[in-house]
Length: 143
Image (cartoon, rainbow, N blue to C red):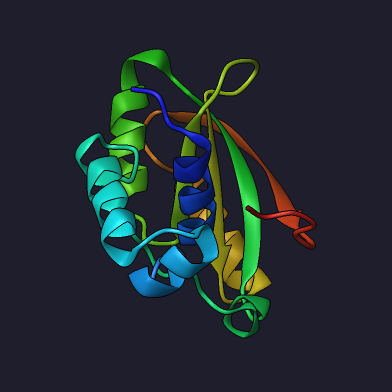
């Protein structure tokens, strides 16, 4: 299903603040509150909007250490590796990728020491052949 420019603008506004009042969204889009509500409901029904989440504050995130962990998994055990990674709360995001590695996990820990332990824990999972990690120093763009 196609989206028009207004739907795209609405999605940008919701991405910036999913808790924005519908009346405020309507003012920014030049639409009535009921029209905006109908558009949101339609986008949810179509699956364009899959859910809403909380974004943690910069202050909270500043105290955390984040890293990308590139993972090579044994092909027959990759599904088990994914399942095990789902159960580790410090794994924020898991991507399946092409190329030299099979997955990239974005992980978070309160300290370098705990990040080191987390990476060791991931590397010890049954089916993980090897890992390479890169600590995130700063985020320049996040949309």
